Image 1: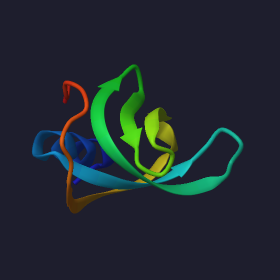
Image 2: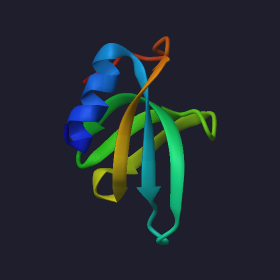
Image 3: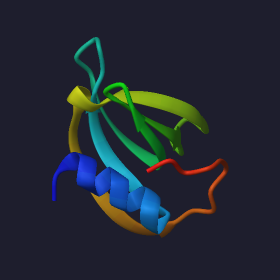
Length: 79
């Protein structure tokens, strides 16, 4: 499954996604996100690490893994 397919499946199944992300400064972080939308080369999701909505450049997502952790949507899921 590709990164985008994993993110889409997470939104459809309301499952948290674990991503490895490389930010604009080159730092790698692991995040747990509730995926809500893919738009203009970005993934919008609620980041459980930072407790807030965040956008992630798709090109910066190194890995995406579907977890078994369910979430109750905070907003409409557009995936």
